[in-house]
Length: 125
Image 1 (spheres, one colour):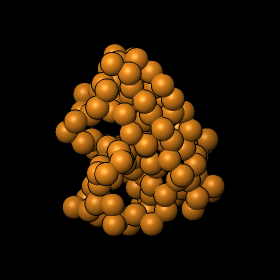
Image 2 (spheres, one colour):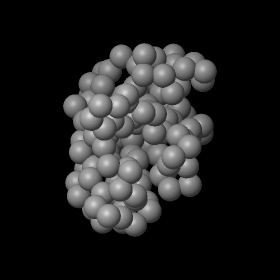
Image 3 (cartoon, helix red, strand yellow):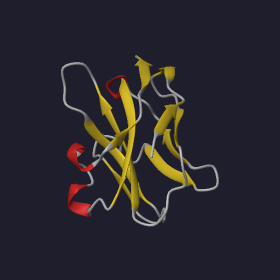
Image 4 (cartoon, one colour):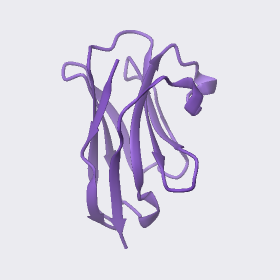
């Protein structure tokens, strides 16, 4: 499965952006999609994840209450709605996914084997 992100850009603090992650093929039972972000010199950080059935969603502490992950199966696309953006949300955002990710490894970079190319999000203060 190949993944491609889009929707990044420059926004003022307090504003909103919606990122999209489209897969090359339809995703079926057992697949988890997640968003991570990375700033230069730091490790990639878990942002949010969603199970294939869209009934279970997960968020990093720094984005909880501000970001919302969702999926449109027909469009083979997972979205990350980002509201109340802060300067510290500035990063390259990566979409990733894999079948069979167990809950205890959901936030673990090593649990995933397919990554998009990343999309830059810049929040000006």
